Length: 467
Image (cartoon, rainbow, N blue to C red; front, side, top):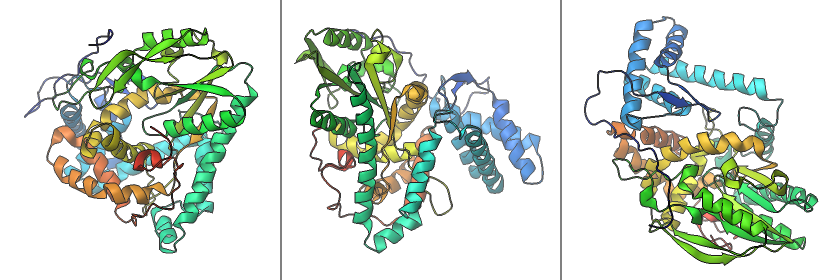
């Protein structure tokens, strides 16, 4: 083993067979803002009760019975020491209602859930970032998609049918490039103070390509820089919590050697040479003191990291010496029924391809692991969005037809694989949702019109950048 690692709390083993009749062991949940809150089954029952009332027959007994079933499903899916997110719980409520043939109540619950989301948005739309959502950027993205006639699956199909897909590729790449250019301009305006530029954001949001493009802008302006890969600071894989499926939870910031990161950042800014580690995602092992790195006084250090905005990453570094860029797939793509593609689902599709090519993982393994990714995002990444100096939207409306061509067969097979395993309910819900959205979309198998410097190439291959 290399280095010393903290002791992680172990996940409880998921229950096999029947459920215990004792009290729930779910103690806390992860709220939308990443904060922890007490778990209350009554809140689930009340939401279902409102759906039964909307159906014309308020039924508290039914609501309580369904809430118990939801709780049992959560325990079986997420384990004895589960800490599910609000998003997880709502997805399971919908699934349980449909399984119990309460289709109309399920539809009304979905309406209730949507109305609550719209109410939150209405309260916050006047702010740049509220409830950890950049509403202004979302609105501008929706307007851009509507102006370019790519705001829905049917609209995308029409563009493809009319051979206008290459036009959309060019326009979307130009929009993304403008946002990166704007961030670079803000960095250059503060060169007298900035020593570190952090490119942060959730998994598969396109941080690495964005880092490359920022470095090009800095180089064109005559500014020197060095890049440090924080992924090399992962502890060895076998030091992370492991569940009964053999899957490791290496998503939280505690999976990184923050002590060593802090020491190396301080040494670099002081002009000292450090020897960074090297981590292999294929073996899960890191080698210490592998790569010498020195930062000159007039150079900027570029950091590409999931947890770049987490305070522990740069503890001890003056705040005004850091520029923080946050990147996320803030897409606004609707299905024919009006439901929107979730940003996390967009990134999941990207990561399924990336993990296959670079991390020795099958796409179905990435799908099953995703609940760890999502839980860590909600607790340790998204809450720090408010600290960002700039936000870049990496969603590309043309990517879905390309991703479908490479993944749809795998996704369809995964539906059957997870259907009868209650411990994989989260994966089953997720893959069904994605398949329902992608099913009517025309796939694009010829990606020749996508340039080698496109952000999408980070995931589908063929990029001119090294990853």
